[in-house]
Every structure is written in C-alpha cells, then in structure tokens.
Length: 298
Image (tube, rainbow, N blue to C red):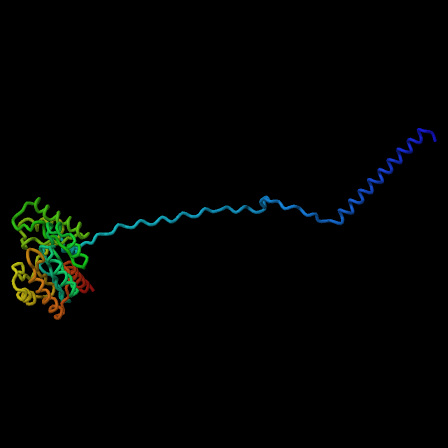
C-alpha cells in the first residue's frame, strides 16, 4: 500500500471511531432521559394570572345612606274649632258630660307658680290669659304653664280698658302673641279683653285676627282679695257643665285664690266634674253638636 492509500485508511478509521463514540453518547443520553421522565420545574415566584377566569374586582364600599331630613317641629297651637273663630264665648253648651274650665288672668307672675302647684297636686288643668309685659318679665313661668299641660291665651300687653285705636289694638295683641310664642313655643287664638270689655276696640281687632273672645260665666271677683271661703262659695254654688270660671294669677297677692282652689277642685270632683282647658271645652261642644246632627240624618 502506497503512502496515499495509507493516509485515506487512517482518515476513514478516525471517522468511524468518531461516529461510534457519537452514537454511544446519544444512546446513553436516551437511557438517562427515559429513567427520569418527570423533571422538576423550579417554582415561579410571581405566577401569571389565570386568563381563563376574570380577575375579581374590588367593589368599593357603598356610601352611607343620606339621612332623611327631620321635618320641622310643628308649634303647639291653642285654637278653638273653626266655628268659634271670631266669636264671643261666655260658656260652652254641653249636656252629656260634667266639665268646667278654670281660667286665670293677668299673669304670669310668681303667684302663678303657687296656682300651678295646686293644679298639679289635684291633676287638673286650666287656661292662663297672659299679659305681654309679664311674659317679657317671666318667660320661664309662662313656659312652665304650658309644660304642665295648661292652655295659654292673649290678654293684651298693658291691660288697657279705655278705648283704643286699631293701631294700638294691633300693638297690644300682636306683640303679646309674639311673646307667647317666644316664651312657650306655642301659638294661641284665645283672647280675653281686659275687664271683659267688648266695645273699646280690642275685642274687635281680635275677632279680625280670628281669635275666639273668651269671657266667663262665673266671677267670684277674687281680684278684690275676698276671703278664700267666699271665692269658693261663689264658684261651687254657680257651677254648671260648660261653665268658664274667672280667677287671677296676677295683679297682687293671690293667696286667697290659691286657698280657694284647694277647696273648689276636690268638691267639684266629688260632684263628678272634670276640669278641662277652654279649647277642650269648645271642642267638646263642637263634637256634641256634630253627633246630634249625625243622629238626625240617620
């Protein structure tokens, strides 16, 4: 074999050996792969979102419900039934119940507190016709009158008994009405003219303003400070159902009135009387009249 032929043989041999080694290595790798079919995968710290499910959205909390506005508190109103507006009343016509109304003029004053104490002790109520000047001076006493369940009415500002112009009547009544509201939070359509006078301009103006003009049917003239027994006797002897009694809680010392009340109230209760305010008294008359009318139409 010449040199060229020998060289070719060497090259072929090297190639065959290389192929043999390569095949051997591939075979070994295949065995290793077959002996370890599961190759662990290192965990991913931040895995991607599952695109098959929509990501949950955070719903913002619902805002708190807006509270309903509180309706304004309605003022307390002392008013008679409509048919008594602009009318003059001396007593109520009530046949089916024994009721009576105690009324007190010229307050509020410190004497009013003594009368309130008697009324509360016996669990009865009355109607207080107040002067504007006294309301301005004793607003807390007026407030106490209403807080204890009594009615309140207008008795003018100065207690004028002489003839007045309409302008003066307006000042006397309207200003007192303002102070009734300021001191008690109540509005009143009850008016009593000073001295019971109906022809000096005050009552006429009150009727124009839709007040009921409340006079009385029993007057023991306690403003003259007679003995308590005399006051009590007059009231007890004249008491009838629907009566309106005139007494005073202002204008001077009212100790006799206080003592008389302590006798009047228990004795009238023994006779079956109930004590009501003037608006309640008039409401009872209106109700009785309506029931009579309804029976006639049946």
